[in-house]
Amino acid sequence: MSDSNKNPTLIDPEMKEIVESFIVETKEILEKLDVDLLELERKPEDKDLLNQIFRSFHTIKGTSGFLGLEVLPEVTHKCEDILNKLRKGEAILSSELMDGILLAFDTIKQLVNQIETEQNESVETEKVCLVLEGLLNEIENGSEAKEEKKEIVVPEEILAKIEAEEKKTVQTEQIVNEKHQRDEKKIDAMEKAASAQVKENTIRVDVDRLDALLDIVSELVLGRNRLTQVNSQFAIQDEGNKFTKDFGEVTKQIDLMTTELQLVSMKLRMIKIAKIFNRYPRMVRDLSKDLNKEIELVIRGEETEVDKNLIEEINDPLVHLIRNSVDHGVEQPEVRIKAGKTPKGTVILSAEQLGNNIVITIEDDGKGMDPEALKEKAVSKGLITREKAKELTKQEAINLIFLAGFSTAEKVSNVSGRGVGMDVVKTNVSRLRGIINIDSEVGKGSKITIKLPLTLAIISGMIVKAFGEAMVIPLGSVIEVLRVNKDQIYSIKGKEVIKVRDSVLPLVSMNELLVGRMNGHRGNGNTWQYVVEVGIAEKRYGIKVDELIGQQEVVIKSLGSYLGKIDGIAGSTIMGDGTVVMILDIHELFNRLEQTV
Image (cartoon, rainbow, N blue to C red; front, side, top):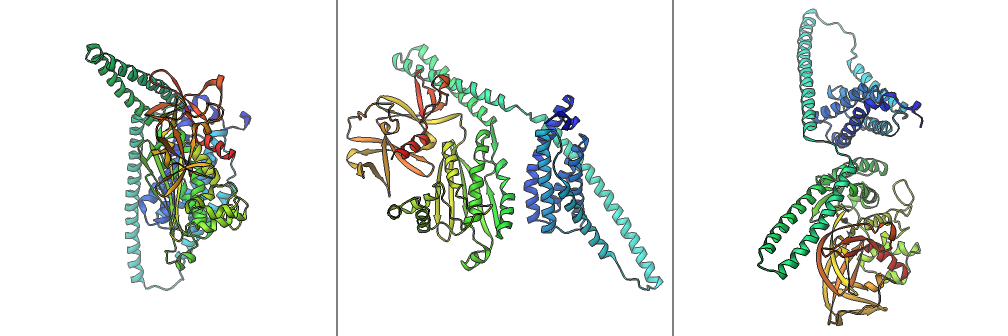
C-alpha cells in the first residue's frame, strides 16, 4: 500500500512512539472490555461495571481523537452515547442493545488492527454507525413517548404544589449532576495517577531482546552442567583436598545462581494464559445463540503463566475443543430437561501448573461420547474395518475422533461437520511435545486434558542409553519408567507388548524407531528390561532401553545448516562431559513407525 493511502499522523516519525503506545494501551483496554461486556450482559444492574465500560470507550475516543483519527472516535462516540443512556437509567440493557454494542466493539478492534498494520482507518463502518444511531433513536423516542401526557385541567393550588416539587427535583438533579461531574474528575485523576504509577514500575521490552537473553542463559546452563561434571570428577579423585573443597563450593554457588537466572529469564517470557482464555466467552456466547443453546463458560486458573511462544500455538487447538463441546457436547435445552438436567449447559475451561508442565482441561456436562456410536461412524466412513472395531477398547473407541476425516456432525455447518478439527488438535498438541487425553461418560459429559511443557527452549529430559549411545527423551512425553522381567514380555501378532495394570502397552526398540541409524540390539544381558512409557497425543508406547542415566535439564540446540533437519531428531544438547547427545522427536518417530506398520 502506498504512503498516500496512509494517515499522515500515523506515519510521522516523530509520532511513532506515541502511536505505538496508543496501539498497545488500546489493545489492553479492548482485552479487558471483551470480558467486561459479557459480564455486563450477565449483570446489567452492576452500575460500577457499566461506568467502568463507559470510561474504557471514553478513553479510546479521547486518545484516538488526540492522534487526529476520525473514524475510530466516531464509532466509539456513538457507542459511548448508548452506554451513557444506560448509566443514566434512560434505557435498559436488552439483547438488541448488547448485540449493537458488541458489533461496535468488533469494529473498533478491526480499526485498531488496521491502524497498526496499514496505518489508516480503511474499515467499513457505515453499517455499525447506522445500527448504533437506530438504537439511540429508539431509546430517545421511547423516552419521549413516556413523557407524552394528555392535556388536562389542573386546579391552581395543585399546580403550584407540582411546580414547587419540580423545582426541588431540578435542584436535586443539579446537585447530583455536580457531584457526578466531581466524581468523574476524581476518577480521571485516579486513572492518570494509576497510569503514571504503572509507567514508573514497568517497561516494555522488545521480544527479540528477551529471546537473546534466553539464548545466553541457555549457553550458561550448558556451562553449568559441564562445571558440575568436572567437580564430580575432582570430588572422586581428590576427596579432602582444599582445592577440591573450594572448587565444590564455587560450583554449588554457580549452580544455584544459574538456576535462579534461568528461572528469572524464563519468567520474563511468561504471560498469563488469560490472554487467550478471555477470548472464548464471546465465542461461546455467539455459538450458543447460533445453535439456540444456553451455555455458560466457566474459566478457572486464568492467572496461570505460560511461555509467550506457546500461548499462541495452543490457541487453535483450544478453539476447536471448545467449539466441539458447545456443538457436539452440550445438548439443546429441551433435550437436557428430558434427561433431568438444567436447561443451561456448562463448559469449564481451566489451567494449572504442575511442575514444569501446564495442564489445560475442557470439561462439559453434555451427552458424552458413546463408544459404540463412534465405532459405527468410523466404520461407515471407511476409516476402520468392522472387525477392527470389535477389538477396540472403550478408550480406543473414544480416540477414534482423532482420525483425519472423522466427524459426528449430522450436517455441515459453520461450526463443525467438515471432517477436520480433532486431528488438527492432535497434530498441534503433539508438535508442542504435549499429551492429550479424553475421559467421557455417556449422559454425563466429557473431559479433555492437555499437558504441555511450560517452555519450548529449555526442557527436562530423560537421558537413556541404547546400543551404547546416550539419547534424550523429552520428559514432557514420559509417563512412567518400568522395569519388567523379560518373561513378562508377550507377543501379539508379531508385536511385543507388556501388561501395565489394566491396559496393554505395545513395545518398540530403539532399532525400530531409528531405522538405518544404528545396528542391531545387543541387549543388556540381564533377565529384566527397562521400558520408558511415553504418550504421544492420545497414544501410549513403551520404548525398550538398556540403561537409565537420569533426568536433567537440557538446552535444545539446532543441528545447524550442515546437518539440517533429520527425521526423528528434535535437536541436540551438550552434556556435562562435553559430548553431543541427540534429543529424540517422539511425535515424529512414532508417526513414521505407524506409517510403516
